[in-house]
Length: 99
Image (cartoon, rainbow, N blue to C red; front, side, top):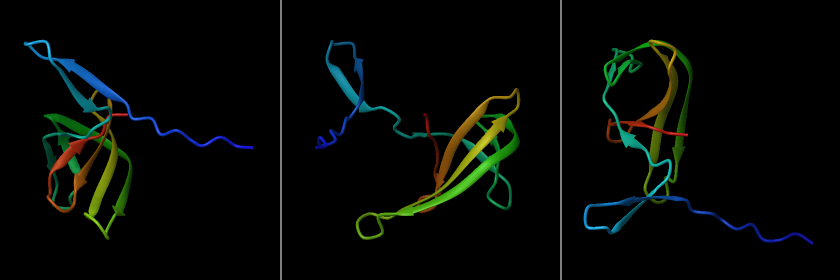
């Protein structure tokens, strides 16, 4: 007999100045400044040059509700730092995806 799977929602809890808690989902995408070339490939992330693109993939989902269309990039920045982010293909905005 198998047990039902419980879905866990995790949140960061930030305390502001008046001691009230602000909850925000963990791993929520954050806007980031990306410079891209003519082909849409990132060349710099927050002022750090992209040394190489390790991988990229596209996700198109939920077309029946609110469409999601994203191009994800796993890149190595100058200095060997790995960065994963995506470009929202609907709005054109870039986001950092923390893991």
